[in-house]
Every structure is written in C-alpha cells, then in structure tokens.
Length: 114
Image (cartoon, rainbow, N blue to C red; front, top):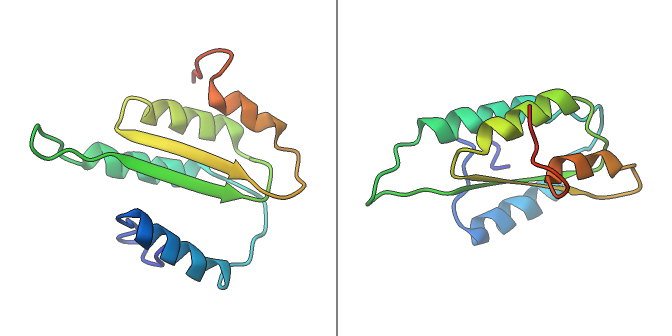
C-alpha cells in the first residue's frame, strides 16, 4: 500500500488511512484476483519477526477486493499457515461480484484446514 515492495509495512491507523486514500486515486483494479502470493509474502515476514516478552508485534493484513478469489486453494493454504502467527487477515469484498466463496474462509461453520 505504501508503494515500497521491499518494505511494505505501514504502522498505525493514521498511516493506513493516509496510504489508502493515496492508493484510491492511483490504482486501477483488474483481475484475475490472486491472494496466495501476497499471503505467502506476509507469512514470511511475520514468521521472521522476533517476538519476545518485551517486544511483541501483531500484524493485520487488510485486503479490499472487487473480484472473486481465483486461487482459492493457495489462499486457504496460506491463511492456515498464518493462523499460528500473530496475524489477522481481513478480506473485504466490494462491488457486485459473487463473494459467496469467501464464506469458506471465515471458519464460522468449521475450522479452515489445508
């Protein structure tokens, strides 16, 4: 979101909102929609964080999408991988696409497994 692929982290809600507003005017949305590789990269970053009693981190990945997930199996694999980390993944569907498959990801009826 910040435009830096080598250090994509944004700290604090104020920075998230500022970068989001900037992105809205500079991004063209198109498909297909693939989340697996993004989730894999986030998992690698979170797994490499060194957490201790005095240095604790919690990560939130917010994905806003206007399309149906086209790599559902890889997305599920990576969400399950990240489930043991200090990571929350929030996926928000906007627009008129059929987002019914996203209900599989929420784990409300049964735990998500890979």
